[in-house]
Amino acid sequence: FDDLRAAHKRAVERRHFLVKASMHEALEVRRAADRENLEQVLVSMATIIDAKSRFTARHSARVSDLARLLAETMQLPPERVELIALGGRLHDIGKIGTPDAILDKPTALTVEEYAIMKRHPALGDELIAPIRSMEGVRPMIRWHHEALDGNGYPDGLSADQIPLEAWIVKVADYWEAITSQRPYRGPMALDQAARTLRAESGLRIPGEIVDRFLSAIDGAPIALPTAAVG
Image 1 (cartoon, helix red, strand yellow):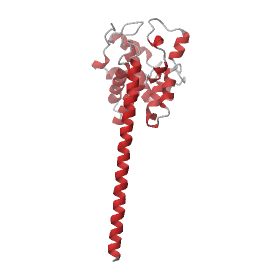
Image 2: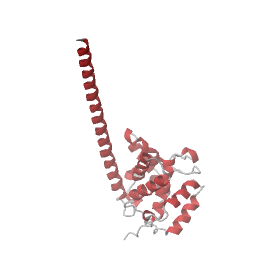
Image 3: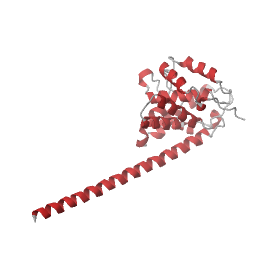
Image 4: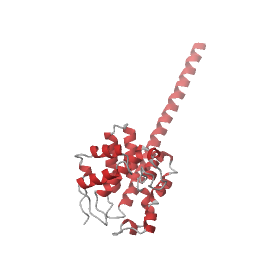
């Protein structure tokens, strides 16, 4: 009788364990689905922001692709590569608060307009901050305009204060900007863009990041200058 009771107890405990495990698995699936849905909403928002100006269409998508390429070339773990790609996609999400007239202005920005433009990294970080599952992308959103010499924005960080993920998104963003049509200039040719980026090496962007990026994009179609906007 004792053996039967012990066997019944083990069976009940096993059933409870399986039910608990099943509930835990279902919860994880739900969380993953919720995160995926949230990412889709944020990516859609980034697409809308890019579309605010005809000169920035697909900007964030290209930055994401370039950042992914560099991260893969650096042989970072797959989950870190995906995080960096997402950071590239969302890096300019704070531009939701930047007036269209500034984004699409065909001449140089005034001091006041530039000050407004410089708010977008901090605004993007503030937008994402309440979302705990997006914690990992915040450094890329907030710090992709920081610089090695401490003269970037919004926090004036320098050197080792800036994480690798932010450097990767920064160099991808820089390259995409100089090789794309803008209201005030055409896209740079590859050789000119490479010289321009190298001029930043060791000054505003770490030399190793510049070297690795230029090596990674060698022969990559994504690195080619975009066609002029009609």
